[in-house]
Length: 202
Image (cartoon, rainbow, N blue to C red):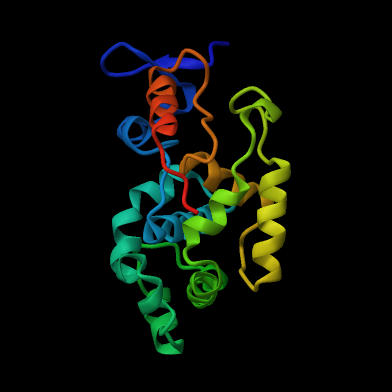
């Protein structure tokens, strides 16, 4: 079976794009491109935790609702959420109404503030775990890596929740710590070029 599927323009993309049309713009413009913005990094960690047990299609379709519900994932604001906010979110049909995951986002917002105070930024912390591409298997052949296991372990040690190794690896794929576009995908080379010119955070 081919590992690519033709996009709307006829050019090959990673095969998972073919599941639904809305995956194509996300794949072409976001997935795998390196990110250093702390808000975006926090958002993605939260969305990956919400995805646990669900499909990315579900989360992507609700992403704007999640952003509205969690103040655009401004972790300073989310850290101030209380039980009243939890109850409000449990009534919000636009998001995934899972108490444990909602409470994890609030908890992780507090931990994010602590991380920034200690490390300077979320970006500075997560990019220390960028894997050596030569040590990884073929693109999309694995769901964890030694680095995702290590980051997961450290985040849990610091009190973060819903950040298992598989969740963290999916985060790494999406935020550009790994170029996991398959060989032959037209976006793979674009991501490779973006990574070449990317300034890693100190």
